[in-house]
Amino acid sequence: MPEAATTEFWRHLKPINPVFKPDALPEAYVQNAPIDDEKLYVPFTDTVSSRPLWISPAQNKWCDILMAKAAGLVNRHYHPHEVFAYTISGKWGYLEHDWTATAGDFVYETPGEGHTLVAYEHEQPMKVFFIVTGPLIWLDEQGNSAGHFDVHDYIAMCRAHYDKIGLGADYITKLFR
Image (cartoon, rainbow, N blue to C red; front, side, top):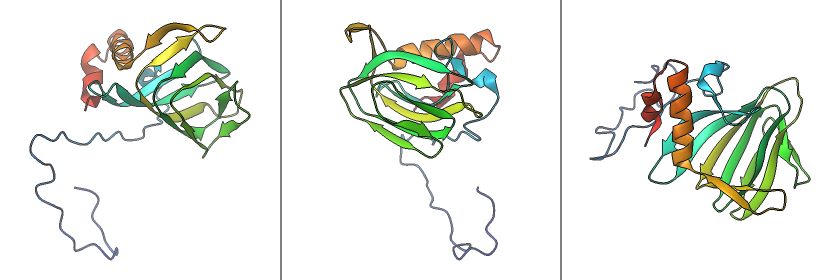
């Protein structure tokens, strides 16, 4: 039950019952998603970490907050599916584009886009909320495929991190939908 309404015009409304259709999974609620507790951020590269918020193994899709506390880099990659990004704090961009994102900026990445994500030095850490569909195809310096990273790689990376820090490898499964 949410906090009780006091003066809101809708305060006398009753919640829907039942909330979920048969076989529906519960919502994923993550309080204080861009939290500063670094143990919840999984190292993605040497300079960038990811806090998983929602994962769909069946859809090969995840939502996370990407964070870099200083200058950071996510290697060159290509997206065969769309990606959405909303900047919470800091400053970041792609070497291949003429914009630099800061707090409040939204980015839609079209399928078929390759880029090199960089985080700039800034007084606040770069924190960006991403919705990623499908794999990242790693690229070499000439733009040729050099491997991939999909939801299953993401899950394995998160399991290893959470196991290493004592939360347990299954900590990540509560985010599966």
